[in-house]
Amino acid sequence: MELRQQILESIASVAPEAELDALDDAADLRDELDLDSMDFLNVLIAIKAATGVEVPERDYPQVRTLAGLLDYVRARG
Image (cartoon, rainbow, N blue to C red; front, side, top):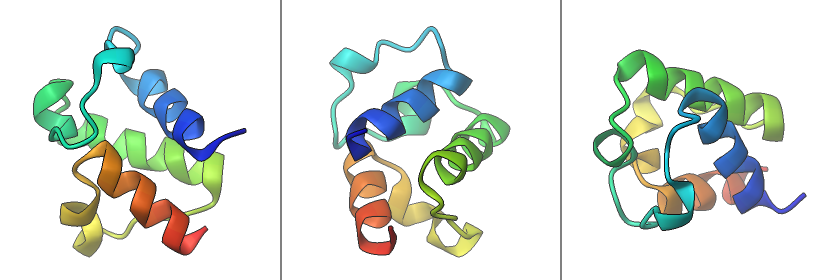
């Protein structure tokens, strides 16, 4: 499965009502999808389950956007 699709499915597992087709790659995911800190953590847990890539808390600023998540996981996957 394509990485972008894996990440979108991980986000959808936490925010099923999100309009992911309209998601801007540069938008802050927490703001754009109205995710609280637990939701965001759950997204990262789902991404780890899907890709095997864990995002430590110190790297959260790097993965605030879809583009950032894609770059981060590609570099470590």
